Length: 228
Image (tube, rainbow, N blue to C red; front, side, top):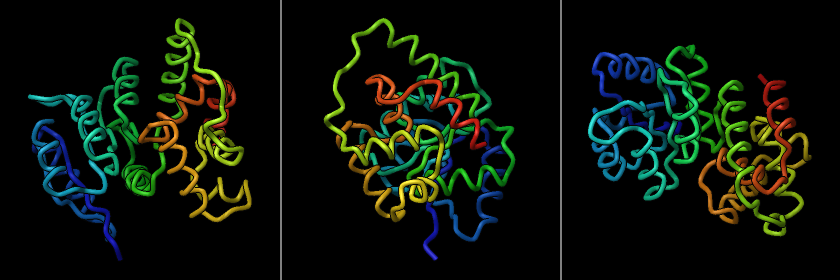
């Protein structure tokens, strides 16, 4: 069994030890490194190239937002899952722009944490519906003040269908069922979407879809809530 190789980035040692114990209780996960600040997290990603980084936001030297941005710019294949006590709009919007694959609060249940790690490892996004609604409404408010990009010729009809279903929070398996295709084909479509739009996460892709009016805000939010 291929294990999910993980890096923990958390400045409180007792919290970090607790997460390590939880994660190592799973047969398909292993901790390859631990960072006490954002600067160390970036260095250890370069050293170990983990599959997933479990990242706190409030850390010394470099905070989790800036660390995530640097990691995604330098190592786009590494998934970053934010696990934090902060749920302010400011942090949510900043971390989505930085390219994080998921944003969870530290009140999350252990099974949801495990399933979220597996989801981002497989290229899916993990965002609580409440956080998604804040993010998308903030995005639409911001974009009203800007000129919107036009045209959707960069995406094929199938890629657009995958993007719309992804905006509703459907995992790859459900998207495959909806479109009568293999999961591997869905994964290929996502890679093509990321490459064409110049993004590295589903959240960024959905944001771009909203900016271009390919996705309606109401459908994105209501669809996600229906799936939780």
